[in-house]
Length: 75
Image (cartoon, rainbow, N blue to C red; front, side, top):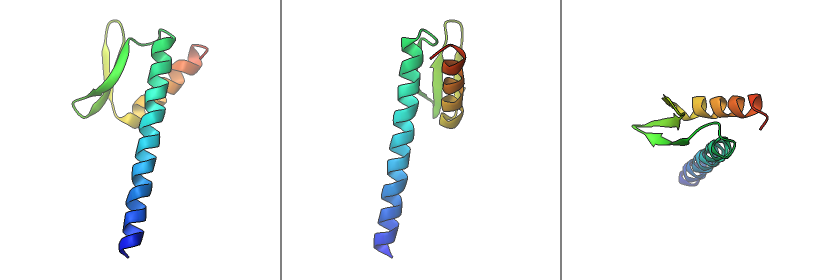
């Protein structure tokens, strides 16, 4: 049973790392395209910086937001 629990924890960690990497790549792409000024974690939320505002959201919301922003702006 311990091996199954460890395998499950390892898989969960890999999924979290992949999700984090995908979010970081999307945010970096948005910065490169000039769509946002910056990004990162702030107070347990993901922060996306625009020229006149800062958005705080969950990582899932941030990933969706960035994907949509990039698609709408030819990325």
